[in-house]
Structure formats: structure tokens, C-alpha cells
Length: 193
Image 1 (cartoon, rainbow, N blue to C red):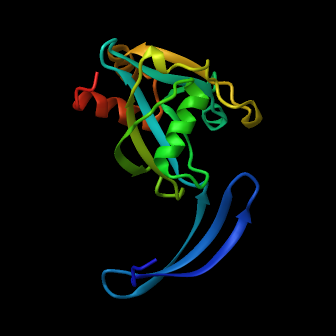
Image 2 (cartoon, one colour):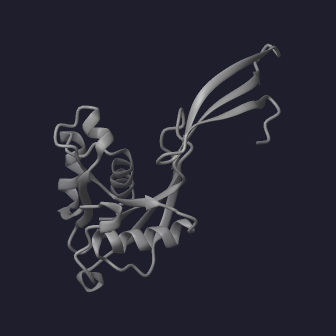
Image 3 (cartoon, helix red, strand yellow):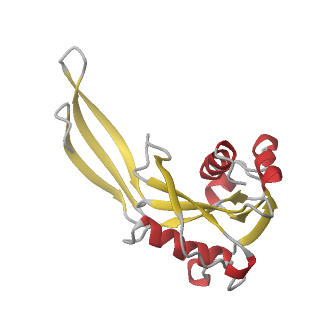
């Protein structure tokens, strides 16, 4: 914390059940040089990484489909979400994390990935920064069926989809996940597939 215009006065732990939810009181200096106080809840779930797997020759991408409770609670009738492979860093560096997550979720063992950008995904309430990667895959890299880890209660369906079809799924509303939309748009803009 290095901005002298913001001074955290108090942090109160509200929940440490799944991740950490704090109530933070911060004094801040306004443009007219007066000070005011802001109280906000901040959710800390750690940082994460995500990847778009693509095959230039086949013009396909690998995505996943799984149940996401928050989307179900907010009106997604099936609770299923199509998204790019992703996971929390859990003390790993972003590259190591996404290589591990790719193998666990999709069954593909990658040897190299390319970081393309990073982004705060919901900066009004969540501390998470997400590291975005792309990586080429082919059938020789498939070492298992994927599907995630049973001890993490993951039941992930691996989808190989033609890139243009996946890109069109943004407009049709079949893909509503922000990180996936961002990666598909990155692939389109940079002619990856």
C-alpha cells in the first residue's frame, strides 16, 4: 500500500470459511483535499491463471463445461458454464499453475505456454488478479481424459470446439464467462487459429 491518499484504518474479518471476507475501513483524500471515509467488504480468494488451448492446424480450441453454483444462484438455469481452463495459484507461479491445471482439467500435458496479459476480474469487491495464457495443443499431448480432481469435487467435461463456433457462442450467449470471452477475443484479434 503506497498511495498516501488512502489510509486503511481498520480491517475486520467477516468470514474465513471458503476464502476470506474482510470489512475494510479506509480514509481517503478527495480532489478538494478534504478527507472522507469509505467502508467496503473485500473478498480474497487468491490469484489465478487461465488458458486458451488452440490447435492452429485443426482450427479448434479446448474449453470445459462444469457446474458453477454462483451462476446457478444468479439465474443460470442449468448452472453449467462453458469456460477456458483455469485455477487458483495456490502458492505456485502462474505458469506452473496453468500447466498443472491444464493437465488436471483437460488431460493435455503442455510443455510451454505464453502469457498474454493479466486482469483484475471484479475489482469492486474481489482482490483476485488473473494471469491469461495461450498454448498450442495436439493429440500427442493428450495423456488422460481430464475432468478435474475428485477431491476438489470437480466434474469437468472437456470440449473440443471449432474456433469459429466457439467465437460465435459469445454472441449467442452460450459462452458468458468473462475470462473465456477475453481469451477468444485475443485469439481472434491475433489470428491464433
